[in-house]
Image (cartoon, rainbow, N blue to C red; front, side):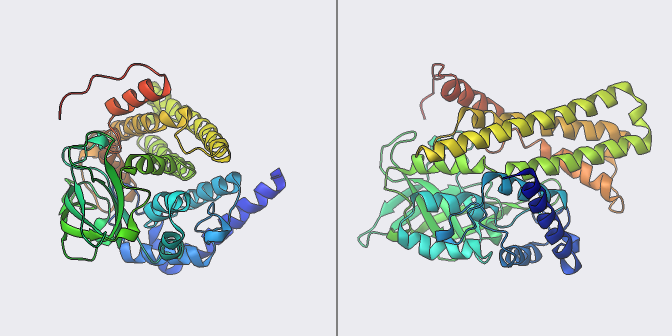
Length: 399
């Protein structure tokens, strides 16, 4: 792709966003991200349908499955321009970015035909059933059970926790233990279940900020059809790890553009209240900017490695991807602390009329969770050491 073609595509995306993120959708600008996922759920679902109508979903999916099969650089440009325009948090991210590519890679033709169109069209929404009370960072310790009945279907019993937007979703994918007595990553199955059925209860988890975008999901004999097993029984860990590889994909560039917005808000607040006159504050802002550039360079390296692995027929996370979550979560947590320091005493005062201050407060509060969810810092360092550097495994206790 030539520089001229890249520039033209970037302009196309920016123009479409300007024309469409307006009118009824104007209130969605910069809304619906982490810590704000409860914002305007129905309108954001309508926005997903607008994106689909405009041809802006399934950008990297094969054309055979309703996608546009765009090259990586064009996908990167879309995510960057989407975030630059203030595009809202994607209600369809789990579907389009995680389970969709996993279905394309591992699903049966029947599964692809039934499940992909709703994701692609922005009409079916998914959530992720991985974490449990005793298996947050240690995903291999899941205890939710799946037992096959005489019909071949699977009956699921157990609990998942921190399930984002389960109350707004239609389907959930679940990692469950299907072999009694199995331990760790062995004996797991990857199941897909409709949420609107007997045997599933969704309970909100109220956060200190007042929202409840997370949920507990309880399964009491909930049914997953035999046709909705992804991969083979016992193969769940491999499928789950491949899905996490898609999580560290191209949309990370959009995440970084949102980080850029947040850094700009911090810098503007520092200029407005005079804290930018403090040399240490200026230095911390400069370091944050440099950290963003490092993050982008590694993301591009990570994407290049993933593209090569796909050509080679592999699905494992590349070494570059192993450091990504640890890096961005610590960077973002530090940005949250910088935001509070820049705001000074006003950081502790809520004022609904001060939108920028509210955004910075919200970002700072939620960023404290970044180094915990999706694998704590400690787990991430173990992954880097063991999988990336080939160091001996840390001794595991008995569970």
